[in-house]
Image 1 (cartoon, one colour):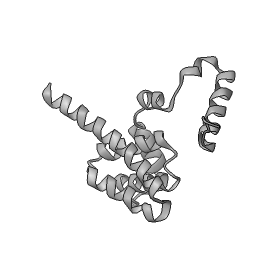
Image 2: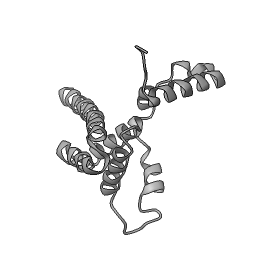
Image 3: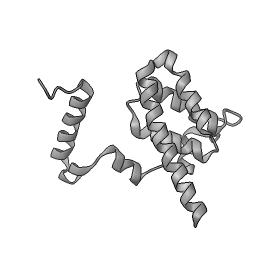
Image 4: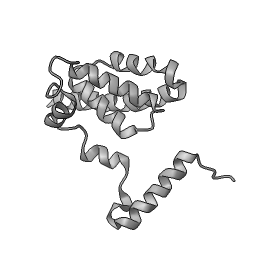
Length: 140
């Protein structure tokens, strides 16, 4: 078969067909469209779900996001939208490109090089967009 697809691609195609049958308006929906619709989680939601609301004196937000990024990388970096959102949140909290890269690279021993590479590519895209946005703001 010349157009053989991976099991993940086949599963995604099947899911898209199912969504289209339930709501034809979602025919053009893509995960990247979700990114532009909801690039980060509102701060209030983050604090309620992951912050000190329920865990006073616990981990700070930046550490929790590094753990989230590590976990998403461990899943084989299949959750692209979630990785993008997590990296955006980390950048908003002042994380550096090196720190984000180190967090992902640390997972190579546990998740494997393909997962680390995919997560790194996704993070690099987000970082480039973030840097371009900052550059535009500086020029204004």
